[in-house]
Length: 133
Image (cartoon, rainbow, N blue to C red; front, side):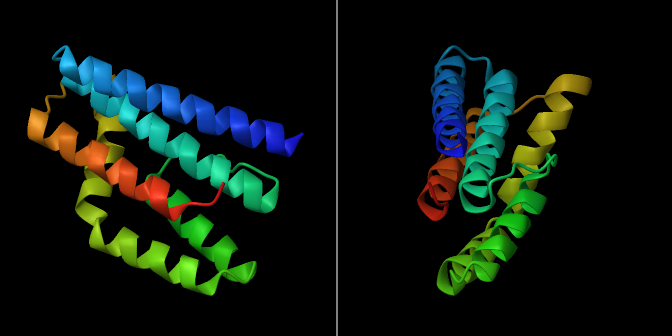
């Protein structure tokens, strides 16, 4: 069952990212950034599910990356864990921007420029390269 759940989460993440790109193209940048953050959450949770059989009830991308890195290390994927930690440190600012999109787009007046949204999309592509499953 967890293999099926992993596939569902991955597909949902893919659909959310596709929708985010479509919304950005229509000028709905705040909602696009929100959807991009949701895609990142689901993609990280799919990887954690595949690795551990469980999905955490966390929403912070940095916490999810930290947890995934720790679980990778525990499972013997030392190099992957270290690369993920390095990625998180290197892209901390963009990860914070993505996390802010999750909260601010729902609760505050949130405006984002096209360049930031494109940077967030590129960040998601990098996340995809670094996670299992």
